[in-house]
Image 1 (spheres, rainbow, N blue to C red):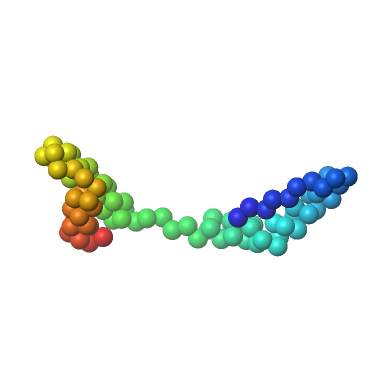
Image 2 (image 1 turned 90 degrees about the horizontal axis):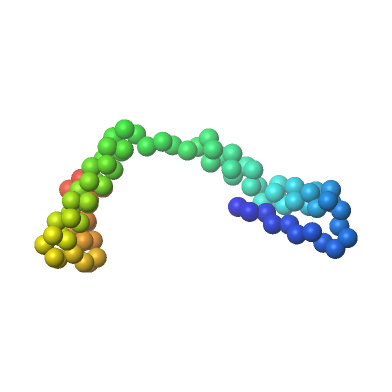
Length: 89
């Protein structure tokens, strides 16, 4: 989502700006930016709470595995999958 325009030798600034404007219009950059601006959907309170609960559960899992000396990415991911199923993610 970027329009790059470089100044050509002996090119005037207004000409450069005109080329940049055309590149922006051709790439539909402004349309995409506006659609993202108004179509953003905020997470519901329930989603926010579920994410917080999940985050705390994962912190606790990590702490517990490290305390037991069993922490590895493989074990953590397996347990994480079980927790996600439990919370319905």
